[in-house]
Length: 458
Ligand SMILES: [Zn+2]
Image 1 (cartoon, rainbow, N blue to C red):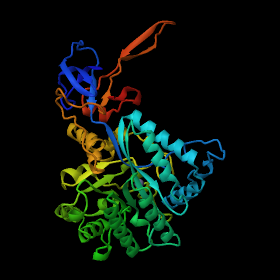
Image 2 (cartoon, protein in one colour; image 1 turned 45 degrees about the vertical axis):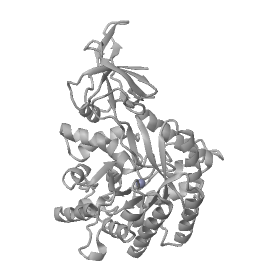
Image 3 (tube, rainbow, N blue to C red; image 1 turned 90 degrees about the vertical axis):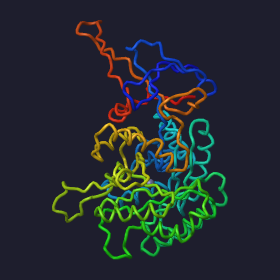
Image 4 (cartoon, rainbow, N blue to C red; image 1 turned 90 degrees about the horizontal axis):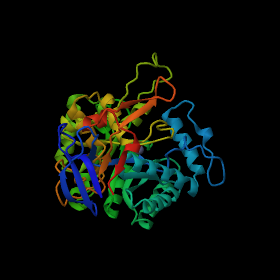
């Protein structure tokens, strides 16, 4: 196979273009392209990664199932208030209707769409509780196998619901405990949601339990954490739970005991955006000093949809704090490891969006108000190599200069469009308009190209 007219270093606008002969996915031969300079080049980039996406909840509101015993109708569950409580309640009702066929169809639609968008690795959250039992997990295992030739699906066994409070806490916990043993070979990460517990004590028990289980079963750890825009109270006992996660990891000797490839991911953490600069710096110093492999995953599109809703007695429904962690500043100013993810798609937690990580990076330019060329490059990293690192995968090999022997299989190849033909002013005449060319990362992030122009090198 020959890749023709490829820009090798997308950080450099004037980079050379190459014809690359591949054998078995590796560079066999590389020479300067003979294509005319007017011919639109192709760009070779690291593939995209979903570090945090919910598999079983995808497309509940947009699947438009024609009601049947295999494919339940969810059309009565569209949000009416759009509140977080309604999203939790409606999603619980949806979960009561899950069937194997429905979960497999929606899951495969998400994976197929992701692959065509350029995604080759995914941390997929599947819920385990007294309502769903292990059904979403067993379907995810089938999907992992059926899509294994296209992408790496890392399954996160996930407790969305309380496991140390409410009437169902014990049952929810027992189901996960059982699944971690029975499906040990297929589960890559354990995830919980400490903030849904009804007391701080229960939240701490939740974190403590998850750490012990991740260590016992040799898993990555992933918390949905500090998901509020309330200012933390000055009292030591009410600090963001991020502090407690670090303290409990240290108590359990994570650094000494855990396999060095295992990471700890903290998702949402919107409350950290409410700290003052000194408070945030203090927290970052604690994380860095711990030397633990902690990664923050910002979920900006999901966060700004859900956070900062006006209360019913609010004087203004127009001035809303759209809070989400500022991932570029966390990386550059605080020295933390961070990336961004989509979280939800087509459900009450985030009804909108295509799930495209590249589109997410593009929106992030506006959400984070970061408009330089270097910012665009950083954001591309946040949906590709930085995201891979967060979920414990190796970075893809692409590093600018392409060499013989280098593996390019699995890289993302972006084609430029030649142009469009429009109807001319006279009947049966036509008018050709050549397309703008995307030649660098900033072009791709500021103006994402459609999926039909993306492919994964095979
Ligand atoms: Zn999530």
